Length: 523
Image 1: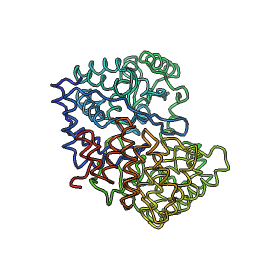
Image 2: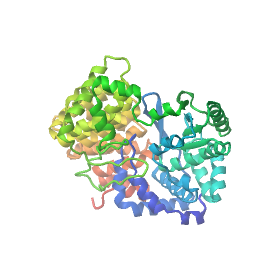
Image 3: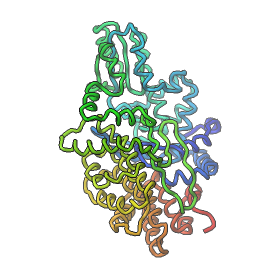
């Protein structure tokens, strides 16, 4: 229950705008969120009224995004729950000590212990599965100690328990979770500081300076022991003690070994362009935006401070084309190796979207192999396809053939299928479109009940935008049936899709005013 007085003090309007405009590098943007931007004020009114009625949050569902090793759980939750989470964490953030209100740049974080010449040794470590093991009661105690805002903290922990299905863990890849995570780990930093160790944190990463090797080892022991008091464990595979002369090399984004690989492969120029050129610091100017042309209720997306923004596909300067070609050519050659170098993988993640923007069709025939062998590259593959078709629409049939091949694979995870469905919808249907794509998207709607169903619904609405009334009515019936199966966090994308095809049916199927905001008026 949210205290009525507290609810009146929360900036829900700002939270609604921020949530509707937030984007993530790990999941595609939902078309329904983009469409609701134009109705943000009305959406805030409905959410506020729901919270006044003491509506409880709903458990979030989870999809697992592939990493090079393992996977990352991503929570998918209702808009109204995300809005309350952001509003509460925003309120709490402004009452925290200054160093917890904003994060420094990561490069500044890693440099700080090295900048002090007294630090002869520097420890590097982080926490295993940090966000999954944050204890809500421990978090609440720390937040209240720092802010004295009992009602906001109590509302926050109640929300977290309902969303996470227990009193442990907070959602990953969210602006609010960055604030809470930094606050949770700060007592460990403070204890190390009081013990005389020069300590810095960035999320769950630690850098600890020491004057001697003995002190460095004592610092790690204290860090590990204190972490355990908070239900956390250091990641042994990422724990190192460097002499400062060795640590200096870690300040370079490329290690000595990686530099040797780049020298051998003659990829130094490509690395300079992709790592240190216009797209440094992981920024990606070529992230795809849903193409909503011809659809109702479209509006522009805005940026979230934590997640990078979605810009229109841009042209790559022709003088850099050969650098991108070289990365792709060497990646193909490296497939004869059982484990291609990590630095080459990083280059490819950055190069793929730009190969699309450059109109380079060479990767099209290898995308199914790429997704099978390196599933963590799936978002980059999706951006490549969208950008390629964006600059050269004649490539749409070939891109659809690639999607059709990939969709037929039986080894795709739900997360990969989500990206694939989204991509099919963004590039749209050509006159030569394989029937398999339409069948796959429709089956995902007819027989699914989770996140893939929601993304496939939005893709289908875009895919059949020019179809005859009979086909639209057939898909509308599938969408209406899906509304009865999916849990609440997946409803809005399906309502939006239904509204694009048959607004009258969508209005009849809508459960509430928030649903109806997604239905085009007057049809």
